[in-house]
Image 1 (tube, one colour):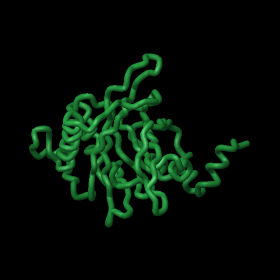
Image 2 (tube, one colour):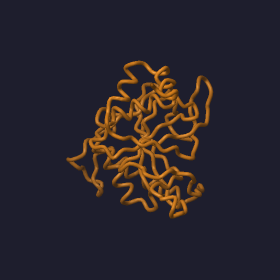
Image 3 (cartoon, one colour):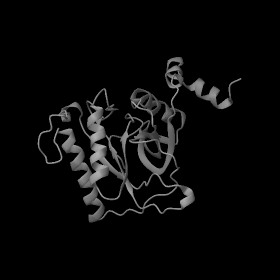
Image 4 (cartoon, one colour):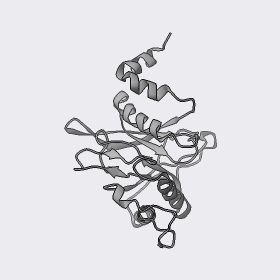
Length: 227
């Protein structure tokens, strides 16, 4: 006997989609982030929540994550964007945000993260010299916004830690016209090594960084950039 929830999901997906989502034995955690971003529904802009996927499975199951990113907004209309949190699986829920203002301090941190990510995209090492271990992949994509979000992960609710850190989202994007497009998937469209190196440098060098994520959402339902 299948649950009502399973039957509702099964009716919304094709047999191939359902098989692809169920045909694995590893855990993928989902965390609903308490922020809303602009999305596209029909001809209208909408504000909906972000679902953050994470897993400790290695190698990272990018194909499964991409499928989930396609399916989740179709099933849950209050979600229009799906990201993957780089690193170990997220253990604790996120129920509040870090108070964040548009000021020189935060702008400088965002610019720093953007510069580090783009250095990797251009195949440079941390001294801005050509790194033969990194592919020059700037021409593989059309755009890669780097977004600061007021999310502080990895806080045990029992410890009642205040939200003080921020996270960053990488948005490598492939499109012909910016009206529609897809997220560049690590290991297929852009080297996984490059994405993981971007995350490593940002966490190591940008102060007050919690986690780094990559946006897996196509357009629609997400927009190219975040708002």
